[in-house]
Amino acid sequence: MSRLLLGPAPTRHWPWHRVLRVGVVVCILCLLVLRFFVVQLALVQGVMMAPALLEGDVVTVQKRGKPTLGDVVVVEKGDRAVWRRVLGLPGDVMGTEDGVLTRNGIPLETRLFGFFGYYEGEERAERRQQRMIETLDEDRSHAILGDHLGSLRPWRLDFEPMEVPPDHLFVFCDNRSACPLDELSGVVPQKALGGIASRVLWFGDRRMKAAGQEFAPLKSAPFENAAE
Image (tube, rainbow, N blue to C red; front, side):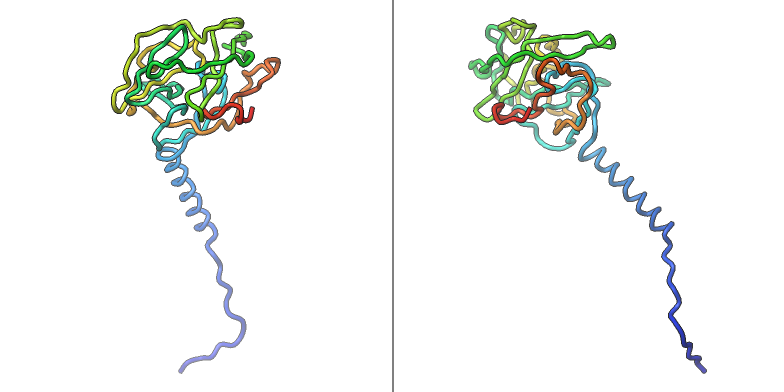
């Protein structure tokens, strides 16, 4: 014999502690996937990529993607990792002429654009350098730093023309006076790249407000249209 129960239906209690636990695990897994396969945050050290990047800046880095001309990338070798800008692609012949970079025998156009000041080192010494705009093509240009105020040459280093082989890139610093030509500059294998810088999330306190420009665009683009 069955019994008929009258009255309100019993209240169903959700196991919120289990739901919360599953949600936390899913969030952690998503962050790990983003961290190792998609995007990560990186803290800038040094001034070799000034004025676009300075020590203390926090940058998002895309782990995947094919770098193009003008991109800022992370170059890794052993336990070292540095920031560099892509200035030459496979097949390009890179060289110098009177302190100016050349690609395929044509000097990259540079023009003066005031100066840039920043604080360097733990003692926060003041530095002011000549700022120039370097043009890669009609769609891409970016700011670089020369040797010192009053200098007409972006840098002092000269080297013989070199062809970028397949699966390699030519990369260099934006702060030309501080960048050596070594295994992390010049021609590097693409497999040494650890990611592509996409945007600056946080600017550190190394920029001098007295310089008149607090930051420069990270991406290489038509400089006249780039927000400063």
